[in-house]
Every structure is written in C-alpha cells, then in structure tokens.
Picture 1 (cartoon, rainbow, N blue to C red):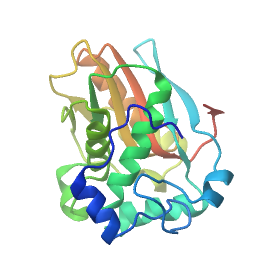
Picture 2: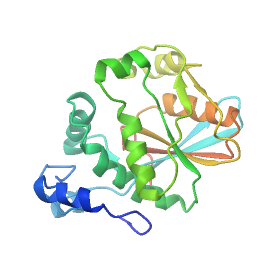
Picture 3: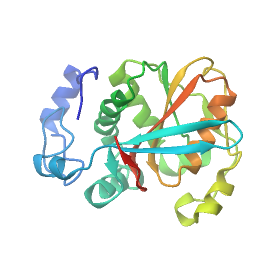
Length: 226
C-alpha cells in the first residue's frame, strides 16, 4: 500500500496509538501506528478494486476505487464502524483511503462525501462517510467539501434489488456551490451497485465539478484490480 504523500499521524494521534494500538482492519490484531493490516491479512488482501459506472444523462463515467473487499474480516470491521458506533475506526480507514487515492495520480481540490439525511444522522449519531472524508482530507492536505445534501428520505439500499436501488435514490441528492472547476474525490463507506455514488457524482457535475473520482472503503462488487 502506497503511503507517499499521505500525512503522518500528529503527536496526539501517536500518543493515542500508544495507549490504544491500531488494529488490523481484517482480523483485529494490533498493528503499528501507521498500519492498516497485519502481515497475514495484508498478504491475503487483493489489490484495490477499480470499478466504472455510467452516469445517466451526463455522458460521463465514474471510476471508483476501493481498497478492501466487503467480505470476511473487512466486512466485520465495516459493520462495527457503521452499525456498532466504533467511529474511531474513521481515522485509520481514512488514511487507508488517502493512500488508495494516490493511485489516481490526480491533484484533488477537495473531498466530498455521500451524506446521511438529518434523520439518519440523528439515528446513528454520526455521519460515517463524512468522518472518512474528513480523515482522508486531513491526510492528503485538501479541503473537506460539505457540499452534498440528501434532498429526501430513501429506503435502506441493502434491502433492495438492483433496479429498486436505482429508482430509490433517483434525485435523492443535490449539491450546493463549491465544486465549480474542481477535481473532486467522492467518498462513501461501501459501494455495491454504485447507484448512490452515481447520483451524488451526477449532482456534483451539475454543480460544476470538473471531474469526479469515487473512493469507497470497501466494494461489495467485483471489478478490475487497480
């Protein structure tokens, strides 16, 4: 995993790592302050997944990178982060995303994210994708862009089939100003069919983004290895 260009943890973060060692994102074994996986999980991990999606009505395609498969220990880690309140995992996963973003070879002008609705944030207590994007932005030294918002409530995506997922999120996101002329990283936790990611990317293009690049912690679908 490349880490050149990714900011190192500050003194306070290193102290926290000493008191509360980082854990392998696969099996939970203790790893070093800047580690992501233990040697065993790291050796078994496939290379970053690269997927491409068509954006209806824009003539654009969206490329999305994901460093982890949504399976096995990585899936359990994402469940702990997303559904069991372990928001502290955002720092480690955000730095993993930052290292993965270097694979694009692009100088990004900001990191946006797929937002929860206000009701969803109240239920969970935090916006998991925003925390990932904030950590990534800090590691890369780029602005966090709070420019996407959820325009209406939707059903939970993982309970729906592919066609229903596409319909469920159609028109559900909009972008405020702040994307004009920028190469933007679009961050989410998990990409499955890409329906939500594509809706958000389309909204960013409508708001004037120069180019949008997807970046997710894990992929539940298969693509090319990056």
